Length: 407
Image (cartoon, rainbow, N blue to C red; front, side, top):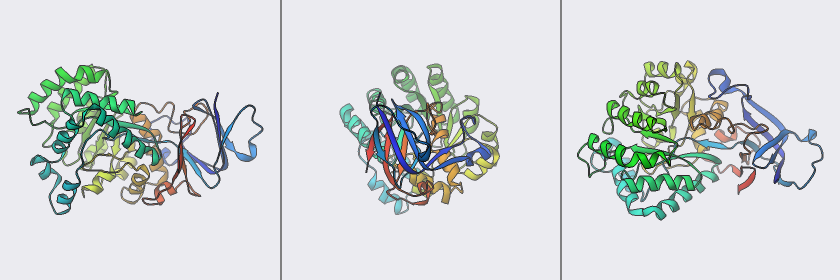
């Protein structure tokens, strides 16, 4: 069995004890255990031991060592909302928006999502795999060891299924975002959903872990979103929703009704939506990089936490509204713009994000018998994760007990 000792770490920081079940809420979001001058011992893909260097005794057998002097170890970061499968780019649109055009205006004029659909369909399956592998590499270099990847830029059978396969091959958790937009070959949303549910869902159900819908003015309304999600649930997929990005259009009540894992965005969520989420099992996935990129109001993170809602943070990596793969940057935005504490941000990109993906049972914390995923910061204090705005702070990444990246 391969063993890896990460030794002489300045700090090991991990979210609340295993006795606190995921998702972590309320005051427990600030419970982070910090060990100074510590080590983490990995064996066969799992954590064997974690503790103080002074307490580390002799180790039998062959042990590979990784020098952690001056570094801080965190659980491998988890990005629970990304869109990595796309072709082309949207740099021209970015320039137009900087000149005053709104996201909704660009979408209505055939730009936005539909412009990426055209470029993605032209890539082909091999091209999609290359793109997703490249984007997965970007995530890894920012400390992400577990990630979700959505389809939704094909909106035909071949490209949607190819996107899901590409995410799976690259090591991500695939989500079928079959209801992202209505492609131009269909007259209306109902006709497109007829096609998607009859022709794409059977294949997607065998490839994806979850299904997602863009419930928003100009995309899919609550009635159509319910139809789509109910069919996906019946096919065995977990449910996610893009909701309340621009308007409150019924996403939160629908997410609660259908027992969705999460509702994501929430920039337009008001007090009633905050109360509803706080009283539910639906997680609120907050995407501050998207709000910043589009110059939108930030989601009500502080209100959600104080009310008792379960929150997670994610990049929303995509070509049009959040062109970043950096969870450290998202943590900086969470602290400076969403008014979260560094401890709350850490929990939101580790154990709570893992909960959204259904894998909090084996990752998101540093403890024996959990998956050996570690993000090592080139910093004297783990809070540099959020403190160093846009900094190149990830020194190395351990995934499944092996060194996966080192700067």
